[in-house]
Image (cartoon, rainbow, N blue to C red):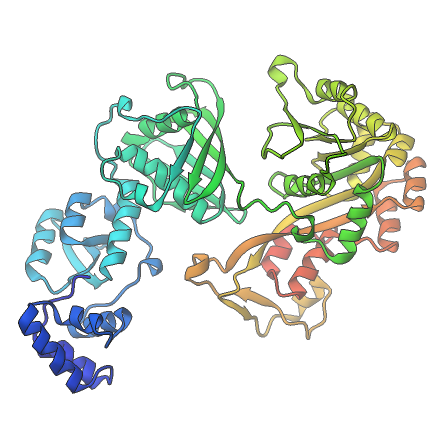
Length: 563
């Protein structure tokens, strides 16, 4: 770590006056400094007399400049663009912001006046200085310059990758100066996405700028993006990794690749769509090592788990999971398959696409462009002696009809629909043309689900003095403690860390089946289900709130009062 060359006794006197070190310790270090010519701060660190944090705070006091941490800063791409990566490394600094014609930079050695003057001449701006640990400065340079100032050739032939192989990315790869800048950039995107547990990466190009966003815990968040002149090269690199046609920029393309980030195996589903200013890229991150397939750990209460287990362990019938895109339906269905996956059970799946490969499960990828539809695959499955069938999604009457017949003829069938709640799933199937008595006979359970963000445990705190009407809207007692996340370094100041599922499970009791046969309305079926103990999505979310796992904002944003 670069330590500012202060007047020898000034730093030492400060530390002594603060009670951090003794005068005897200071004298000992000064003698060592006279022999080694090393900086006093380094000697104090090596002897264990001070911590790095204490030393930097003392230096900040001595130099009269603020001490800043990388994780507390919002680095602006406009500021980074004012100084080249080469100069940032040379002077060991990172531009932070640009306001009122003044460039704020964080430096490892703010006391070097000559260096400060040189930087002002280069950027042709006045600069203001903050102190930052040298290791954090280096990290910032790697993180932000590989994103914003990609150098090297614009020639796309410089980009290379082995098709069909698994790319392995480690921390060292991000600092590999021998790698092409575009390769380093794409590696850095994947690295950050895996570390931050992002589910999707969005690269978007507009008239003058490029945007990089990642979906973390269900919400899209913006990150530093590259300059537009490098965008085509970046897209080409991703196409090569995904075995797509580099020359085709007029039509949508879908592909996939496999990467390994610090040991984590990740399947990446790539989608390219041509827009007005270029191709938009969306990459779905399917982290095999983080993908939990334990039915006990997907967020169900004991009562919910019992209903679901009883339904999937029946010898035949249909289990339907409903909810919007990215609500965790795949995790729930795969968890059920894993529970049933034994050597004496033949499991077949029809998926669009196959998201995760399951051992001993025969999975078929739907290809509607060549006639390989859900319905055609299901018809073939019936000649494959199946015990359990998973249909990725019921989209039409033909698929629904075949799935119902399979459930009625001794097979366990799992599938999904896009409906708002469990009860409306039944009327949706009726609208598809399925007779009500067939639905009543075939369906074992219907489960609607959503994902709610969970409070970061590192900054969790109780909320005081909430308005009484909030408790009234949530239908909870005024004495119920309610929590939120204050925001900290570990959750990127969001207050949230991870997500959990909430469920609304409609158990097909005798009374519910009779109502379906009589073609009762959704409202009548829901009232009967609630009377029998149905826990609605809103109630399930409120239960997570009362457990201190989620926030009021999540309850209101994910569920409605009628759900």
